[in-house]
Length: 118
Image 1 (tube, rainbow, N blue to C red):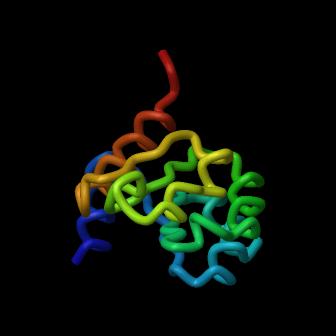
Image 2: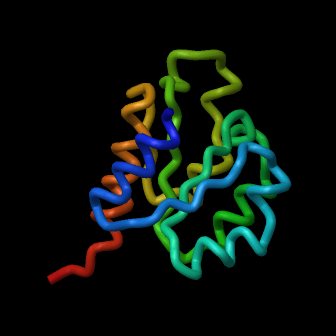
């Protein structure tokens, strides 16, 4: 259901969503990143890997589009180890604490960032 809401928000804004699984191998697959660059806007849910995966950090660092780090909950209100993110240094911005609404906010942010400035 959440995936449908994300796709609907992206379509409404004139964008396509390329979603990857939460599996670290899928997220860091260079072919997957290539597909994202070739026609879709990029959405990835790094989940708990946000706090520890330098492989995801490195893969996202090669991506030429906007990267929005998204957390359903607010990491600052959770366990101390969740307050460290290896994604933040390569993210354009961070959205956290808005539950499932965060996905819509992330799509809207990416759409705004991709609009050519006039």
